[in-house]
Length: 206
Image (tube, rainbow, N blue to C red; front, side):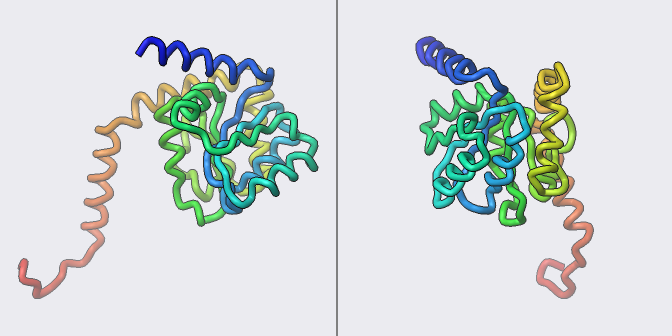
């Protein structure tokens, strides 16, 4: 629909032009294991602004933290977003952050949503983002806000690095994140599991 596309482009432009800093996007529930506090602390010395989509019991606490850290003017708590607004945010952001730093987040499906919408590069903790290695992902290994800040620094402080990372991520997704690629990986995993599983003796299938 041409009118929908026009309104989408206008909304994306409005988000991007609201402030001059690069846009970092987080999408998820406002609960402790999501690590938004880690993200906020990393933003103190990071030249970016954050849009945080979602709601939950930690929202007020994290809003207070942003104020205490002196970054409230660069952090937008957007609350729950309808599908059209979320699509606009994915398209408007310069990079996507999943700062979960505990095993309570085994794998954030929102990472796949972000990649599908071109919200790359992805930045995630090593404990939950091992599969992001490569151009599409920037992994911080120490699961601390200082490690996250160090991971973000080259993207935002080296001229042209963010644009280069975005282009590399798009190329990687286009060549490796395909149905054929995922199917091949799935079949390989199943074969590996079967190869490591002892045969059941005396079963009716023998």
